[in-house]
Length: 208
Image (tube, rainbow, N blue to C red; front, top):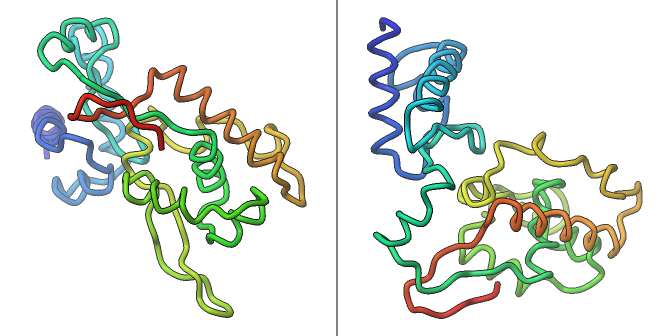
């Protein structure tokens, strides 16, 4: 596919994909090497960055169209958000542990936090921020937990390389409850920096 046609095709795919589309999927649809997809998207980014109220954002190994923060006041007039969903400290800790340690089991999360996390995990699963992904080999074959794609979208994170390493946050060879707290603080800070909150339709503020 010629570069000009590939650009238009990628733009169309990004437009209809809503929450984003992976580089691999774009490559499959257009029958184009992923390296070429990266080059073309980078070219599109440069064009869009200087001339549009929206931009192409790299999220979780894929791409999506996002609106620029400076146009939020106008967007809010069109779509007035009546409530928000905020992360509790416990939810932030669990999300952080999953982000850095994935795939990870519920028992491993409990060991790091020092408390039972099953309730928090259930809530995060319900809100599509984490997901079950296979099972760990060993006694009982416990389910493995990974970060779900909406997390990357909500927090504006492309991948784990965008945030400090486990060691930089104080992670030790033997994880402790304080490690989970440190990670929770970090991800909460990321949320505040990116103006992160999820939207509710019922006009209430909900903490998860």
